[in-house]
Length: 342
Image 1: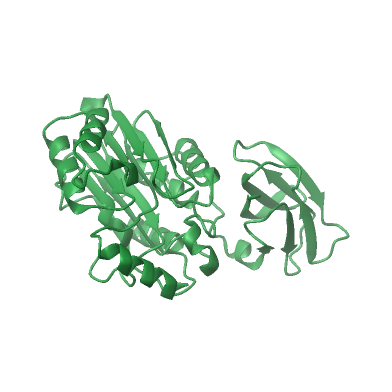
Image 2: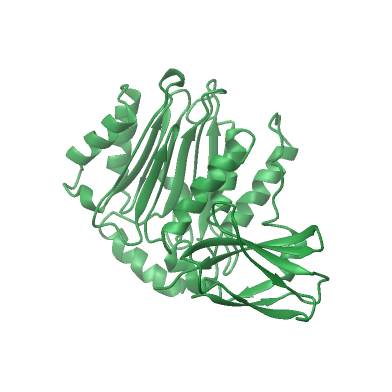
C-alpha cells in the first residue's frame, strides 16, 4: 500500500501539489482560542521533507485559522494567510481564493476558514467539484469541517457530532472531532492498511500567542505500517496535558482507546451490514447499537452466543454506529463501526 502511495505522491509532487484529506478549524468565543486539526493518508515518509498533514494548517492567534487542502499549493496558502491578516472575513477569503487561484483552477481545491472577529466568528468553506470523492464540507458558528477522498459522508458527520457534543475547552473538542474519524479508511486510500490516515496534527492558539508560539502544537508526522496516527495524536495530547498548565476539564468519558475495547474484534469494518464480533471470552450480556444521533437502533443478547457472535445491521442506513458492549447495566467497552454499501 505504501509503495502505491509513494508512486502517486511522486507524480503529484511533479505538479507541485499533493492531496490532503479531513480536517477542522474552529474558534472558542469564550476564551478567544483558535484551533486546527486534521489528518491525511500521507506523511513525512511518503512526502520527504514535509511535516505530513500539518502542512495545511495556519493558526493566527486572535485572528483565525485556515486550511488549504486537496492539491495543496503553498502560494494559495500564503495568499489566504495574507488576506486574513488584512482583515477579510472567512467568506471573503474563500471568494478571494476562488477568484485568484495561483493556477487558475479552484475546482481542485478545498478550503476551510474561521475568523474570530472579536467574538462574532465567521466561517466558510469551499469544495471544488473536481476534488476526489467522497468530498464535502460542513460549517457552523465558529467551525468548518472539510474532507475529500473520504470513505463517505459519515466521516464528516461523525467529526461534527463529536465536536458539537463534547464538553470542555477547544482542544478537547478538536481532539474528539478527530476521534470521530478514527476508523479504518476514513481517508479511503488508507483502508488496506487498516488505519484512518498516516499523519495527524492538533493545534490551538491563545490570544496572547504568536504564529510560532502556539499554546498547543502537536504533530504526528509519520507512522509505522498499521499504526493509527489519531491514536498516536491522542497519546501525545494526553501526555501534553500531564506536563503543561492545563485548565480544561477532562471529557465526560471516552472508550475509544480503552484497553478492553482492544480485546474486542469487529470485522469486516467497514461492512455492508453483517458483522462478526469476537469478544475473546469477555463477560458480557448484550450489545447495544447507537446511530450518530445517539439513538439506540438495536440490541442483541450474548447470553448464549459464546465468544463470537453475528450482528445484522442490514436494515440500517450507511453511516457510523457505536457498539456498546454491556455486562448487565455496566458498559465494559465500545467499538465504532461503519456501514457502507457501495
